Amino acid sequence: MTCPPTSQPSSDPDLRHLAARVIGTYRLSLNGLHGPAHWLRVRSNGLALAAVTPGADAPVVEMFALFHDGWRLDEDGDPRHGERAAAQVRAFAAEGALPLTSAQIEVLAVACAGHNHPQVSTDPTIGCAWDADRLDLSRLDRRPRPDRLSTAAALNAALQAQAWTRGLADVLDHHGLVAWGLDGMRSRLR
Image 1 (tube, rainbow, N blue to C red):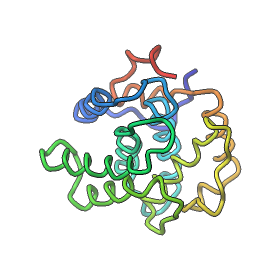
Image 2: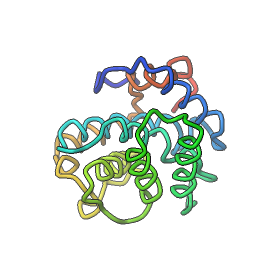
Image 3: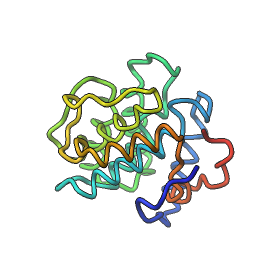
Image 4: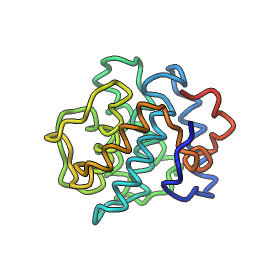
């Protein structure tokens, strides 16, 4: 199922190249719980949150969606996967592959490193990133805990309901598929 438009697709070939690289190194099943379909829902959630959160940096939130679970080693525990994602952010940045400033790269690395810890952030970009991931817990049949949401937007009942529905139905964000160059993989994603 494809979700209604939540953002305009990017025409950035760098973003498509990055997505191909992340997917190319992903060790788990592409249709698993933490795979690209989840990343795309985190993108949808994150861009919706960033649009109504003052000071949130939407491009960083989108990069978080792409990177945050890309270096998981299993679908269950894996408490160091966020730190591995942060290391990859820094490695991609060192080779000049991330279209972000050094300040944005640091925020992205911090967001990736801490996303799987039970904490909140006062930084609007990190808060949107973490909340975007937590709003996709419906794929695990779990509701996000209000005390673990960082942004006022994530506490909005309508936004939570939309995220819950997307996760339960395994909705794929059409604009995200196009922006990341994954539209040809639609049938392989859960």
